Length: 516
Image (cartoon, helix red, strand yellow):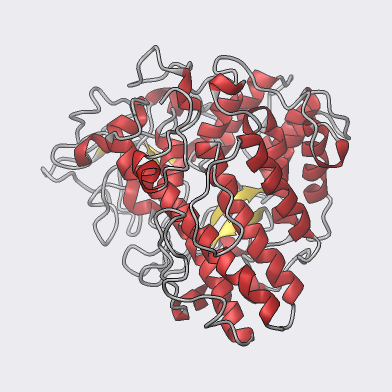
């Protein structure tokens, strides 16, 4: 059955929501009192996968709303939430400010909970023998590495915990964390299959490992440095050149090689013939999606993106009418670009019935592209990103669309960027990007490719996919780029998030990131 594996997380009694590494990850289960047979091992593994759904809350919010792609304006009594969303978008956070309390603390806790779940299972595996043990160990290590990948992206220097032993650990340099993640992914890859059958869709594969590594390597100019004070250039491009990674390769060449490994994989990845196929409720069968977070249309297990963006009257149950984008981003899309259809603008319909709807005052609902004042926006201000469309079989707010963390399109982009940085590969940057653009235009007029053009093209292809913060930092525009509702002068420190003060209070071994 579709999604059988992760749905089995419903059967797992895993309550490892530890907020820092000083808390015991053994409060519910431990290697010594569980994991006696295959069913229990698979249940434990399902729990590690299930934690991925938390990445669609705080990590995603930070990666999108602190950029030019998304904004959450205050609409009357809705969405102020103590100033959390405004603090996040304006890049005014501190270790104790509203955005940190709401989002950064949540991301730290949720991601380290994933690490903790993986550590418990990995500690237990040597004490039990089950079928496909090498693959299960590879999945657990890859999942742990992926949680660390997200933590490294946000916070840089981190404590590295590889066992379920209760201890307080100091944070290590970002370069050390980078090398740890890299080594774990390379070690895990050997035990993973090229693909899984339909019943196990969504489990880690070699292609998923290669996609993460390709992303890490293209970002190596950022990911190996401890913030602006440690070498990240906050105002210009941070290249993958000059950085050596595993195997003695430059990071740029390693990025290209890993992208090629996916592009040439016997798993049969393919660009979808239409852009929307990778995001709709049937996207579990998309050959473009390399690594996904699984969702199903069941209570508490569904994707809720439609709830975040749609107006109160566009869906049942009532959405939340929050997330929007700014006019600058909407206008970046050419009118002939089919990808522009991800935005809802103008007179609006109920997305289920197709009937035109009114706002709560009874007037026709119209979404504008502009927002006059994010502290007092109207119900209809701001274009809405409707990339993950409503599931016809949704259960309440639970939609069954899988969230695509890595798509094949990104491998084309990474390869093109690596070639522009001097890596050697087949094809050429323009041809690679045109291959992705082909489904977006009836007639493609792109005639040249450059690094600045790559950043623009990534906006057009990946809006709403949690990539923008990472891209802006790599291209030196996160704390210096100009867009609506952010201060013109912002501190370079924002290329790294602060470690929440509550985590430092709980674990005095931690030290704060530079500038905070």
